[in-house]
Image (tube, rainbow, N blue to C red; front, side, top):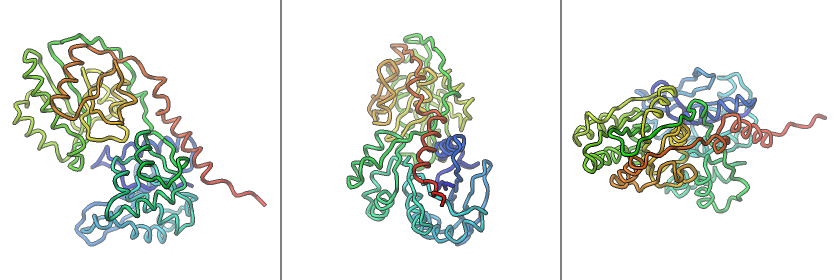
Length: 386
């Protein structure tokens, strides 16, 4: 059995947190891999320490921790090492795993390193985190982050650009230890639909998809899209410009107030969290998808939008280089006027995005699941019979 360790995972209060990790886990299970998932769920609580063991709706194990000191516990996973080493079998009824698969180096990769030593089993790290490379140089935690990567049997970034960034940050680790295993994206839920896009239409709908949690304030720059909308109104006052945003979180009220202050209250719709069917309906009814990100490791929603046939205007960052090509939209600087330039170009030209099925085959859950199963087969070889 392979034990998955993650501190990011969806639940009722955070329905999109770590959904890409859940998608990979589902893909591995569907491929026949023997995998169990442990979500270390940490949050603020009234007591010094309140620990519960739970089971999630898909059979995942949940180590729920509520504590007044939760941030300190999050940053020092040695306490979780001690607890899991003592209680794993008693609380779950499962044997010690044959290997550990951690998702995101901090703190899950560090926990995997410590548990691997206790249980004498190998571990690997899948990296989804855009800050991972920078954290190898963190003043307080950089040494532990580097050690977790150094001792891992394999490092699996979800994109080519993240792989390059990690290799540059970790020059002592051989290139053979890094292999891209992409996020599993079920694009069958977002089939291509040929769009008849009229150049210089009298109305034009922008769509954005991003979590609005406070931690993303400097990364998901929805505020810049709102400012770009003001610029478009100034340039093309006879066009009815609208922006629709899918995603929820603690920043919503502040962004609503900002939109109202910009005079956009009647032109902006806040849709909240959407299920795939609802999101697909937004993709096929919009005229352009706008993604203003400071950084991304993968950018699933950009891929989904393009797959449906929706042109994309996105910030010029490495994550989008392989997808946003001529005829599919454009990459722009992270600046309201530059974003408006890109949107105005799509509006003026009336782009049609062609199907891209062959290009995205590698992201299919069946492909990702098979890749993970193969990794586990090499990581945990059967003991020869005597």
